[in-house]
Length: 317
Length: 71
Image 1 (cartoon, each protein chain N blue to C red):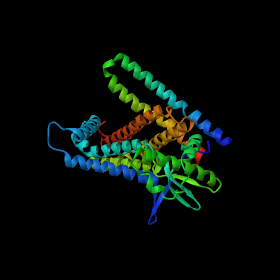
Image 2 (cartoon, rainbow over the protein chains, first blue to last red):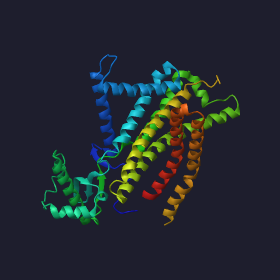
Image 3 (spheres, one colour):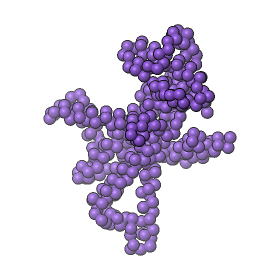
Image 4 (cartoon, chains in turn red, cyan):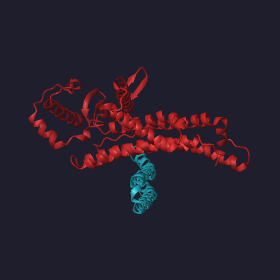
């Protein structure tokens, strides 16, 4: 594998708050959650009772209506729809936003470089720099030694300024990379798609399966447990054990499906942009947007089907 | 080197099943659309959903391959 390519299968810690390690994927999913909550609050405050919704309210009514239509098409039951809808919609929105957020520029490419001497902030990933362009820029730009205040300067709003700053960061990073090649310098990005971390997807899978049991118990009462513990005859007893194992298999399946798809997409994009910097990655970005939506839909749909199956009594059919 | 072979082997063997599965799915879906073009939208949605499930098997193999390669 190419030496400069930055691929890490697990999320990397970026901060430590009172013993609680904050990884870059937690950081990103907190940002995404904040965005979703803010959007929800804005829509809630601005929405009016009207037969002709406009703008943001219209968009959100459309999203909510289509998700509700999806839930109703599976459950065919008003009460169940009311029960399931909040969770299904949350799964879909959270996963879709996270997947799409991970495709924004700067995800996985802007971060800090950790060296034994200290940490340098706001650097570009070593693999994202083309050597020739970095050299050409190095010839143009004067060597000013303001390496240390780089963290503050990326917020400059004038376009030219940003480009200049970024160029200088690239150049600095390249120089430092050469210097530190044998010092064990390590690049850590600030952002990583929340769903590209196995912990997030495992948590989502566990939530989904625990909710399945909850809805089963709520709708069928204690007779739901007959699915797992049935002593009426040896065959049903054995089937119960298999059902119990299959619940755990579902968690693993949920977690790996989502993680695998999103992480594989990230690796694909990293490799393609490493090979050819421009034009060629574009169709792959299109593919990843599509995959991000489809995986969110698959997760929500599958949870919905499991919820629905758990609420159906086995004695009836 | 044996590690690289293992990675290639996992991907090669792991993608056979999903490839056949996706092929069957698409062929049947196209057949269904040919018979009943009005239902194209619904068939397409379900086909893509089924493809995502079949693809997940290949993704499991990919995860194993990536773990072998990078961990």
